[in-house]
Amino acid sequence: MKFLFLALACVHYTLRKSQQAAGDDLDKGAWSKFCTISEELNKVKGNAAERLQAFNTIRVKNKQIQLRLQIYATEARDETTRTKAAALALWLNRKGEAAATAGMTTEAATAINGVAAGIYAKGRVDELLELMAQTKSAANGCLVNGDSCSGSPVSKTGSIIGDTECSLTRKAPAATYSDLTILTPQGFGEKPIPTAAGNGKRSSTIGCYFLTLTGAGLDKTNQQDAATVYYGGGIFSGAKTNGQLAGARLRTLTTEAETNTQTWKDAETGANEVKNLNSAPTTMPHLRRKPTASLRLL
Image 1 (cartoon, rainbow, N blue to C red):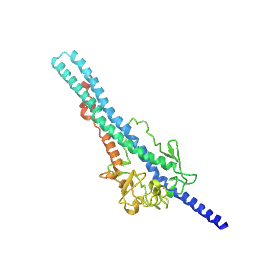
Image 2: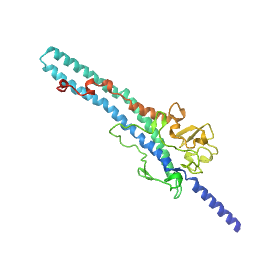
Image 3: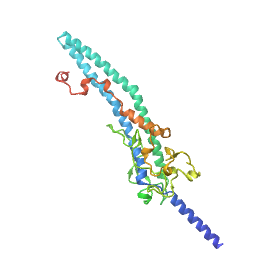
Image 4: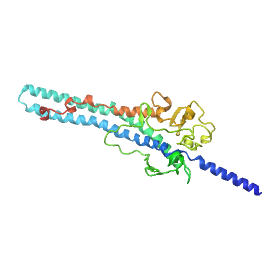
């Protein structure tokens, strides 16, 4: 009987140690990049608002000058001058209407699509971070605040995970345009998110099942034993090469011509379309340069 109790104690200790080791996974240098992606995608809303506002600004300016020209046309003594002023006022009215129409139809649809794609991608990575931050005990967790998984597990408090800004919410749009840096047409422009064990960013057990490629992830053996592997709750994928993408850079999981990364391809395409919203065709040429003395009189 004594030996039975000793055996049970050993089994309990072994299981406990196994459970403790299973959760120690991504160090701060790796998981904080997910936070970077989340924070970066907040920019898309403000960028779209800034681009659309440009159409309204042009409409207002054209309308103001149009009204001044109409007044000038009624007061000018010269018939030719009155005719030119009236014609220019009519042309400006058409330019203003074109700006308003573009802003409310084609360009607005492009902006809405770009924002939706960005927010959808952000929502997926936010949910992953929420789940990983919650997957912890007093001593173990998916997210570790240190190098080579040597630190303590971290948890989310308010808009901070550990000591890293990671709000995981939609922030108020910024007033000015800001380019995205982590999401590019060539893929992700950031540091490695390793997906194999023992490479300095992850524990030797690959314990966080959200990021498991092979082995007993989510209680399934060889869950990701395929040519294309998925990790991070299925929101990232890549070809199964080089030891299950050991040390692979995010940029290698390209968004270009890659059907397995459609979420990120759509987000990048949408952000780029927002960036390229162009109000110049609806702008009167003098509004794009310093006005002459005669125009300033208007």
